[in-house]
Length: 189
Length: 189
Image (cartoon, rainbow over all chains, first blue to last red; front, side):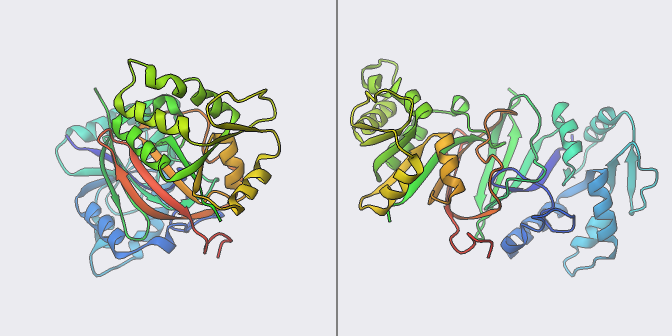
């Protein structure tokens, strides 16, 4: 069974929008002052341990526009470009980023099917809308949140669903720049 | 200047909901230890009434644990101020009722000499946060997503940067995030 891991950059008040500054959000790029080697290593190790990306259309299109032309010595960009990507969208007709598959219908069944096969983690990054669907159907196995010491009070939030989801804390780790990693699994008792 | 601190139980999705707080020995001991650093506790009406309805009688409650009784002794004894225009009186031991403008009063208190003060109560805290009057935040992040309720950060201010001081994890999965208001970045610098 493969795990679906939701991995996000979050403000203290739960905003996930435009952490890197490439979208048009007023506060975009809010992670930049806090980036350091520790966080870079964490994201690198995460990508190397992953087997695929599962993305919503908007995030997919943002990544697809940026990654193909990036290159770095460590191989982060190469892996972003070579890993299988599954993009959930009813409107996207062509997915031209290397190794992409469009999931346009039977979304829950198909994603459950992806989980059944053996393999490394399936990462969900960005993808605010897709995550609501995954939450509703209990498809998320881990929330991996990098909490930045910033309060924005505007912007898209990660958690929008009504209804309680009890969680189990897996790890809480501070980074030296003031960012805290919080990892949770749904508490499926 | 006296320091004003604010501790609150919040869900992972940012709602202040004391009913989902895991109130075990570690949590009570944490709060008792914190009370030992203070000489005054400030309350808004709602939280005052909530606390006053139980803590005075806790030492005599057979269901109260040792850690709860210790917390009760401490908070019952500490000087308290409740800010309310509607309350007729404040019957809790060592409590002063202030009917005037809370923010003005608190600014005066901060100018005075003494140990740190804490504020309990969402509404009161939010009005203080807006004016950057809270010096230290202790967010006790409960391992649960609740989906609805009263947001702690309710969209009334612009971007704020915080400085992470330390983190602590309890066995229950609660993570304490301790932040200072980042003076340098207070004006977006």
